[in-house]
Image 1 (cartoon, protein in one colour):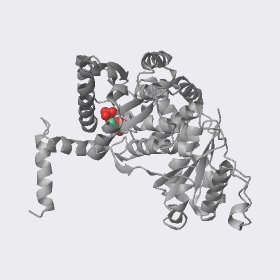
Image 2 (cartoon, rainbow, N blue to C red; image 1 turned 135 degrees about the vertical axis):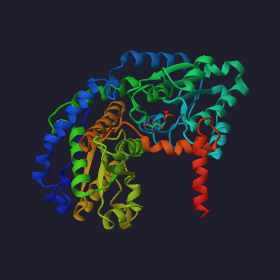
Image 3 (cartoon, rainbow, N blue to C red; image 1 turned 120 degrees about the vertical axis):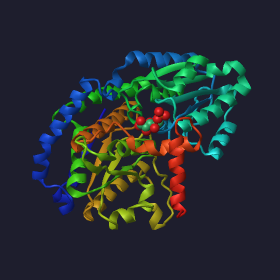
Image 4 (spheres, helix red, strand yellow; image 1 turned 90 degrees about the vertical axis):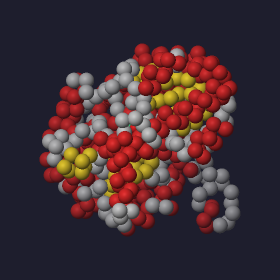
Length: 461
Ligand code: PA5
């Protein structure tokens, strides 16, 4: 397994004053070392659990045994969840089973994954119509066990299953939730759903390698052992104090310097791989929700964060790159490149006698994609736009498991460097409480009243 991080184009000698001077990097190496030490201490104290997830072989065995029992009885795995309870499974599905919408035809031998992560009725009702309740396994995933979107969609799905299967519906539902709290856990116990649990010290956006990501992945036929193997191997490297051996620490330090020293408040995650497109969306949540914080650990108001943007190469060269080249120089670009494709896609050599056609014949799509990535990096560098690259040898279970784990470690290290708590998300609570108030949930009447006052203010009353 091979994943590299190349920071060359973040240096001043490549991008001028928008890049980093050697002295700036050198003087921050102690901060990077302190970041890893602080985070390691917190993990040892049991505060954060994601680094331990790839080593849970007993749980992986249980999940695989459960999936093996059911295999052949369904052609669709329907995941009901949102945020960290959905994005990881989506990332795994795109990466390992092929980009949407060009996966192989689904069947009981190759079940598809349908992820219901919104409450748009036109999406949910159409999804239900597209699935056969007799050939569907439902995974309902919510760490809190109370997320309004997940609960509302699950009530639809449960009713839809029960209308076809009656009491047997509960055998087609598996819940992934916290062991000791939340109404989903209560319902799962009452109804006898098979249940897998999520550790309290693993936050939703860090949970892709827990049962939250692995149960739907295993039911859909992905090799979760290989995923864990790649993540376990890289975890050992992520604890290495040597910046040159620890890609997660090096990437965190350079992104931190770009944000703090060069005010690059936007990070464009730029995969040149349709298979990694889902990972880019998963990363958006990880980076945004973990690092976007009002205060630091000392309680000072700092409004930390770097806005993550996902762009797809080469597609978005024809949509975003004009802005990236000539617009505000407020971004750092992180290319995600892939060295090897199972089939590089040889371009047919058809002589047309036409300039725009004939030079491409006999080459490969993989070579063109790589040339596009390298050329975009060179062009951005020429425009003094700092950019760096993660390079994966290939997109398979081991590399994907490792890459997800690198991103999580990088985010945790970045949180330490910024001196913020990367593992809470207080900022999403107020909107949730207004929604509960508007939807009539008991105990949230004061938020309904506050919302009404806001409406009146809007109307100038
Ligand atoms: O990272 C997080 O904790 C959140 O984004 C959650 O994943 C998201 O809000 C969904 O929460 P739950 O799993 O409780 O439904």
